[in-house]
Image (cartoon, rainbow, N blue to C red):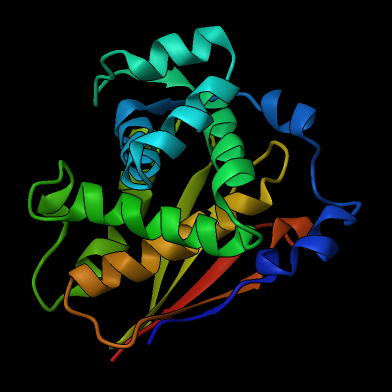
Length: 217
């Protein structure tokens, strides 16, 4: 059974009153671009919830975003990070059913399955029974899909590692959850059993980076 200890996954009421959580307007001003692989995976996640709910999400978005997301997204092309953020926030507002944290964790896991699974574009980064191979390539994978921020990797034992995320812009607490879900699922796809992801530091709480300790057996 997966285990998460993610500070960003506090109950919805507590999160909505946190003064450190950026507003929707602040999130939408965050600079940067993301590769189409991320948008494609997020759209597949939304559509996996059923066409009716997918249409509810899309129709809530601005016309320009709808045109882009309903069109052909190219895996290797760069898109505004704002489109990704607006899609994620809208999906959470409509699909979370009272548990926003669980939805973002699931979103991260789904993205890992999509991009690291047997038919995924990032499958070469998955080696059987070697989660460390994937984790040591996290910095490379992240920089290939994001125009801002960076991640580092530190192996701490035969079945443990630390991934740190550094960013200069606004803190997006939901990103901590999708990262945790992605890391856990990535370890599973690499043969790690009982994967656990603990966020031990977070920029939202004043730390210099968001730190994820990953363990498995």
